[in-house]
Image 1 (cartoon, rainbow, N blue to C red):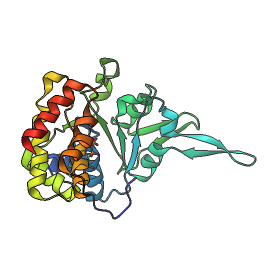
Image 2: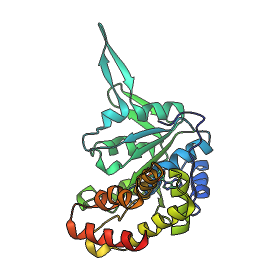
Image 3: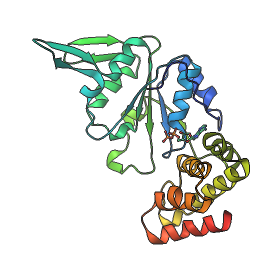
Length: 262
Ligand code: ADP
């Protein structure tokens, strides 16, 4: 959860800020779609700040996450059981933006609570207490999804997907990514530009079965290692070459790119 008052720095890549603001005004649920480490989380943190909707409620979804984890549960106290709101319920009551990161990872029963919140009803059924909670007027549900590495078994169902407007994210163009890497890591502009160029070339290695290539996050890590005194080539080994693959031929292909461009 981001702290109120923090201003998360975000460099717009396209018209995503304007689109999200319009979606927010109409209270349209939003799906952020794109590969890992391309800025989706930073974007929503920035938008929550920009729209004065801090703190953002973020839930990192995983395969054991159930509807109860989102909605809440009865907890035992000394001599009674006390109802405790889960993160989604808290957001629905207080009018926060709730960000469900990698939502397809969660158990299927979560759709039961997502669906009535994302159509004209805007209600959260709390099965355990029998409450039907009307969403606060400022509540907004935002989910993220990486189409690249989900198996078809874990695809978003059309009945869920079609409740959201879909904002697509891609790794940014070299100039933009260089600005991001410089800002986030503290390396000089020339180094940042070289790292962004390496990123661009590595992503072109599709034939090696690299689904996502290298993320902006890893390029930032590389820059942070360099800024921390690690030699550039060693930093690229650690944060790019060995981070994105365990396969020797892929690592060699990436190392060749680094050799040429560094
Ligand atoms: P995702 O949620 O898509 O997996 P993140 O939002 O965590 O990725 O992005 C990873 C890192 O990349 C961020 O912490 C930030 O340093 C950097 N980043 C990526 N895109 C941007 C951007 N457009 N503006 C600012 N920082 C960015």
